[in-house]
Length: 118
Image (cartoon, rainbow, N blue to C red; front, side):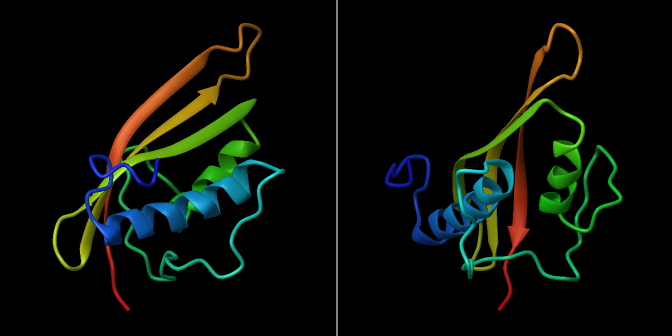
């Protein structure tokens, strides 16, 4: 999917998406390993704004908390593009299996705008 020039039209967005997806895969799936030194990481002073409310410092920390609640949690970065030399927009899908008798699956879609710094 990373070679899809329609979903990832520029190298920066592709690199950011691959780096974050690798970190997410290492977190969510026991058979996957997160990269030892990811190319892009969240800053310790990240300004994360979420309409869902959060007590976590990064989206990855919030997903870690979700693993304790949901029966299954999957995250896929589906596309991305650079908005400027320092801003990247990533589109994503989060799928969860609700922890009840029916195990209903819920799909959340959205986008995030990341500001890059060195």
